[in-house]
Image (cartoon, rainbow, N blue to C red; front, side, top):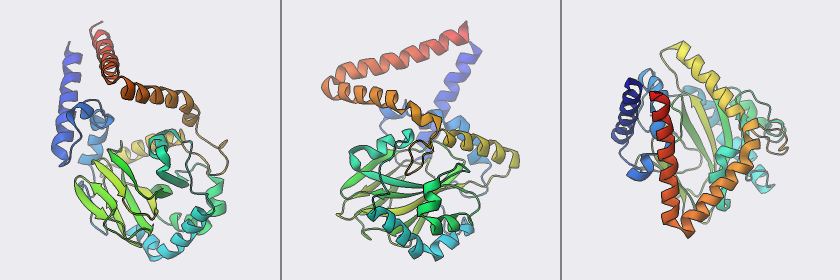
Length: 302
């Protein structure tokens, strides 16, 4: 019983933490089962031991090592445009990005995923890769395109051990194309960057007729405790190793991506059920949640 009470208290505390930390919120029904609620205990050590701000948007200069990218943004832009025009920035078969690629709204070209081998990045973007290699703590990087008239709905990214650094390359340079981070709007401009904590609620929009091309990266959050940094690093490398993929050769991929087909089929079924029979969808969804909770209760009391 003590274990059950502890789990309930952790869940309630996590839910309160997310709601109090963010100015902008998901609907309650979604927040109750969103992974951002369940990730709070995992992320709290990163927040509490952070050597930089834990605000939604970080001030310029928080990561001085990225200056080399901003000084050479036009060179990076030219390489990205060449890839886009040759259709190398495209949809991918990586499982975590599957929702983003829906409706052809988002395209990507992976540059770096920790130390995993992405041959096409070295082959097709050598200058950008040479610059990224000079940025300590940048273990994830890609060119990302948000297509005209498309949006990425509001969401939380799961992990607080990194922060998002994105550099505008070829953008509409318009207030109609930007980010919303915890309710605050940021418009994309060529050569300008934003650094933010992606565990805050955020969304992207491009209400223009021009593609938005950026360099999107994650930087390791500097922590006070080196041991904690190493633990998070090892976890992040292992997790992202499940889902990395080469841009040209899909056989170069993590084992997690090989599980995509059944997961996509399940999600497609649930989406179709939600549209055709919303009452049955809600009943099935909450039945599954209650079964999981019931199983957890049984396990704790057995």
